[in-house]
Length: 564
Image (cartoon, rainbow, N blue to C red; front, side, top):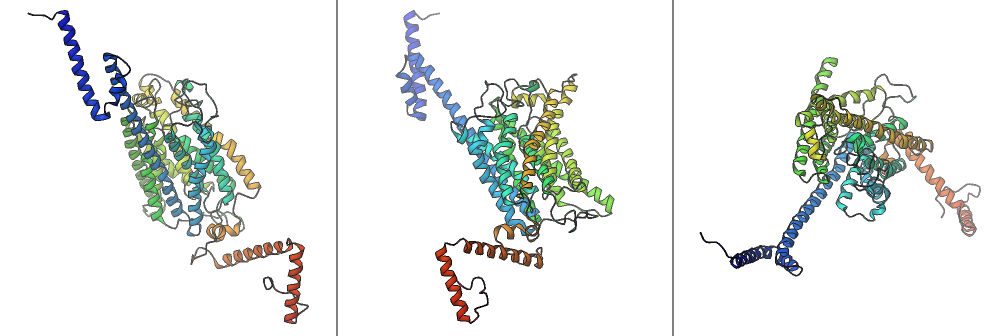
């Protein structure tokens, strides 16, 4: 058997390397006009050239993957932002027609105010200067006005979440909140209160964050897409606000302030808009939950995580909605003898299921999503009835949906999070839901403890900031619309709209409002006349005297507006 000589082996290796190089260069030429090869060839000998080209191609693949991730993150942000339309339709359908315009304006202002607040200080407080090495901090301190931000898609994604949190409160206070108060609490919520919660639970440097290098209790809080950060924050703000604001006129008390024997229902004017809003919100939730997988830094394989989140989102919403519908049907039939399929129970049950699964959509199995949705449907019905019993007026049932179901969603993770799912999403599986820990023969409740602490932190933080703030607004007289404005509707009161044949506005209320409006205008006109310079005042007096002489009524006063 023949063998190569040293020279022949060298020649063969050189020829093989040359052929491989030419083949690789030919493939590169199709992709990049030999720019990669030429750059590498200018820097090194033949073998390092091949290594350089391979590294360049690998980096190109990484860049392409990052670009694709950015595009999908922008798309997910758009889906979440589209939820603003869902909230707008849901709120518009849930209020009486005399307040629709006011409700629409507030929903649009949510987006505008959140964008400005998050651009200036909100993002900086939430994620400013975060990294994976620095110590735990209470709040971010850099990136104000987006200075120094390189990942702008991440900013857009987080802005959409902040806007959602503010919108929750707007629905609860519909039909009776002043515009000035709305603008004030929206700025405070999106600029400071929400960012602190987001920093604590989602930032790499948050004290409760699962992404912290030294997470609390070894695991940190798992709130994958915001049951606590977004929904509990908004829901807690709503419950404290309505406690101070009080119910709508005639909802629980008569004109003399005496409790009604049975609360008066204030049905929304359009169930079709409510249904449209529900479907839009459900659709937007596929950006909310699966989209959150795109910001994971602990795994490159985000596809399966996002897919599981989407499946669990669907299951929980469907189960919660049907549970609420048929449970309400059963209760109504047993208490009144008449079976009633309540569409509102179905819609809000679906939304409650969506809120509840948001925290654990990527870390629980589909069967657990079924259980979470089942309990969320029951919790919605119980908490909605409880609000009426304690006479807290929630115009859109946002407190049961977002606060109660959001609390259950955070707590459910502590019981039902699967270790392999946590490992796939967060890169660690030492701590799991308590039921899984019991199956392991362990009583480790670290994750459950983190989730419970998160519940108390969110509610406590919102209470600490927003409750005194609402008391101050109420003390200043800036919080609630006055009685006459509320009776004629905020569309007429704040936006100059007419009654438009609306039967909800009684004629005597409208006449009283117009008289008061005219009196204010006359008082303003008289005040302007009193503030005129002396020269114009003398001219005005001469004109008035001439008018009286012309009428031959020197002793009579000329009506306002006749002269001038």
